[in-house]
Length: 96
Image (cartoon, rainbow, N blue to C red; front, side, top):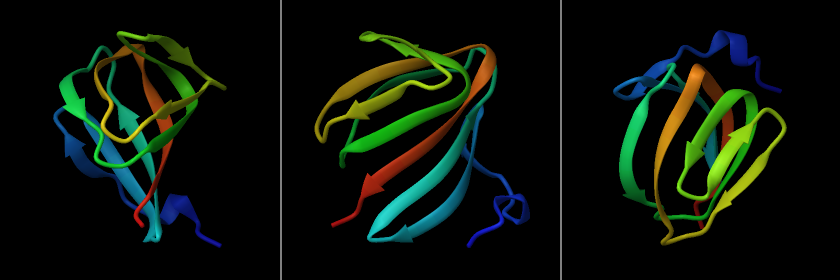
């Protein structure tokens, strides 16, 4: 059991913070994007599963909001922008 309230937010990128919940075989993070934050195109080194907990973000494939589940395949590329209220996502990546 992990009390995520006891984990501090670290700077992830400009306009984004992260809480690392696990990095044993599976990397699990909470990522908080500030309102209207834009991130340039990047390539995913591992497959990433995202579950949107609050707010919304968009990329060239669509707009995702609370309750959406997004899979970014290994090698895929996208640029993202958070919504006007920011976004909180649960990110999961296989490390093996």
